[in-house]
Length: 168
Length: 161
Image (cartoon, rainbow over all chains, first blue to last red; front, side, top):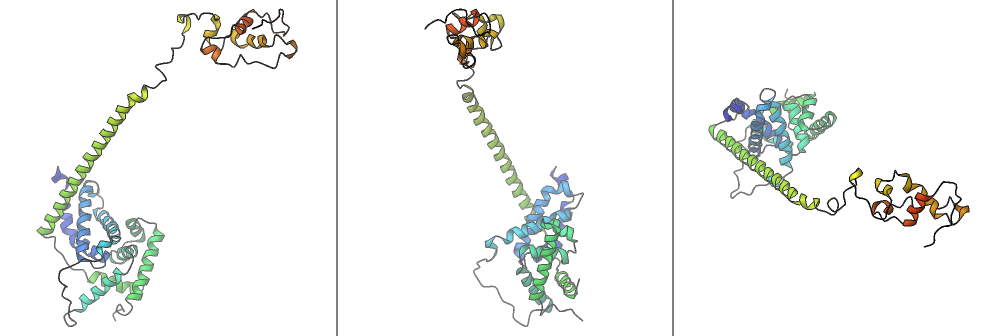
């Protein structure tokens, strides 16, 4: 029964884990641990809905769950800080590659957006979804999703104006 | 899509690193599924227990609600010829308000002493106690049955008392 129920789920999770983790990392503004938790929770929810959505659109289902979980978890205050026993090693100025620096800058800029703006920007520009599907994933009208995306991009433009110039 | 939006898309996609779905992550995922399943089973069992408890409480209080003063203590309604005759009352009063002897004549009996004021008072027709309890006033019933007509001119003087 359980094997029949989860038929194909393991393959789906293995195939989409990396992509979902990257989306979750963008949605959380670069928080890797929280991103892994969100992907895991989304896949757990997908497992229970798998008999219904396996033949239809499991990718869209898990993306929608992921976006909503990310928005919900952003409202929890305890995600903001984690006390640690030792301070983490800070990278020196010479051992940071350009790609890592750019990714860190992007994640830091995304973290400054509101959760809805961040989700709208990620779904619109990373996932390349049409506005209707962005609105469906956010659970809001199309105009609201468009507004979130445009305001998020405008704010990112201000934040990244120094580093995100087009490469010539 | 302008240059900045294209650059934003590129930055988002270039930072993507492949993360394998290793056995540790798989084990953690299925442990989460098992924990969630246990939670769902417990919540479902708790919901069922609450529903059963609610039904039990409702059924326990239902007989007490039904033993109120209403239906058991009231006399049974009279049904046709099986109703016992009421002592001292006319036979027509037990059969309901459709009988002509209970509605028409008592009004005239009350105004029999004042012939010129025959349309002012009709109290006996609307009094429900005269038909429910069976204790109809004798003068009302008597005059209602012995009154000859509706002319408003009494043929005999009204009784006193």
